[in-house]
Length: 293
Figure 1 (cartoon, rainbow, N blue to C red):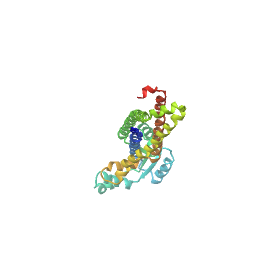
Figure 2 (figure 1 turned 120 degrees about the vertical axis):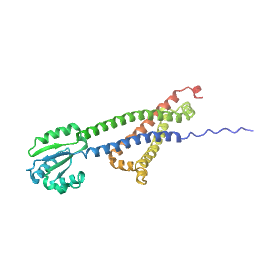
Figure 3 (figure 1 turned 180 degrees about the vertical axis):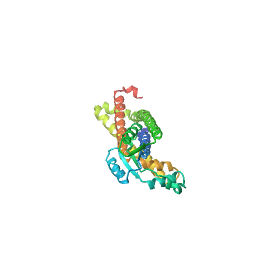
Figure 4 (figure 1 turned 135 degrees about the vertical axis):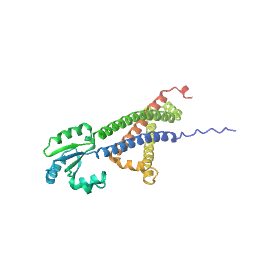
């Protein structure tokens, strides 16, 4: 009786797709988190103002004209003219509810709050502006929150350095993980590779389908990875009250920059899958038959 030949199982694509998905998910999670904290930091920086206080004899029309000139500067995000009445109300709301009862004996100066763009919000730039505005006519004093700004700037530099270090480590992990996954996937096809080589197939003919296969795996993994990233940052927070902090943070994510980061991660995954499959396939092509077992 003829013995039944054991069927060789077709190698599964699942491990390779899962590995590529995990790598892209980690990189996507890191890049989205970095953009979220960067956007939140920029928002805080743009709420830091330079407050210009004018002499008592200055008219509101003069301050308005000064405001229009300042708004033409490329570094200005927005400005706010604070009248004496508004200043008195703010003082009462902030410090003493009874302030308006004796406000008649107090004269607050007209002031202008200038909010620079986040890219210009540095302690050195603010100090230079302070000196510049103090030299202007009708200006009595210029104030900004120097300690807070210096602390905020230092913290943002620390976050950027930490994000850069984590990105470097994750890239190394991604290279090792994808390389190992691709190698295992091609290892399961080592007999097919050697059979094609024995019947006269060229190296390029053998390598091409494996590169296309793993590039296809990367293209499948990318949307899956960013689906999970989207669920973490938008899906769960927007449909649940369990993570209010995420709901606040994701409003400061620059979607244009996120698109660029996402495309870069997709290209990185595709290139890494293609290069890894090319290297691994060539390794098995060069391997002797007796070493395949």
